Image 1 (cartoon, rainbow, N blue to C red):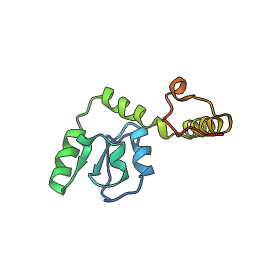
Image 2 (image 1 turned 30 degrees about the horizontal axis):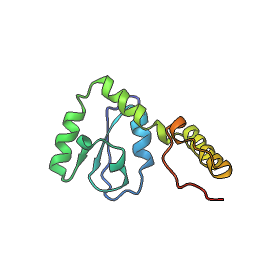
Image 3 (image 1 turned 90 degrees about the horizontal axis):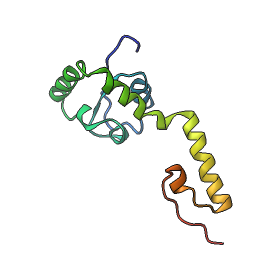
Length: 115
């Protein structure tokens, strides 16, 4: 992955796509089908719905600036093990202590626990 610029993923209907996240984390532009779980985190300009379109997307992805590669790499940090543990701990703390930590940590809203 150190020498590559593009990661082409051809499997339609992927549930999540850990290999896609790993490629993006390494700074590669992931080119993926327009269906599947990866569409939630791969920018739409790098998604395709036909092989002809995939060819065009790959060709344009080869010329992406380093700043865009860095932005894409940073965008998948939310899937890191450290972030997973942090988010899990925050969720458990909220459930146990019924505290409002949403605003402080930019945590998604969860239903209030009634005592």
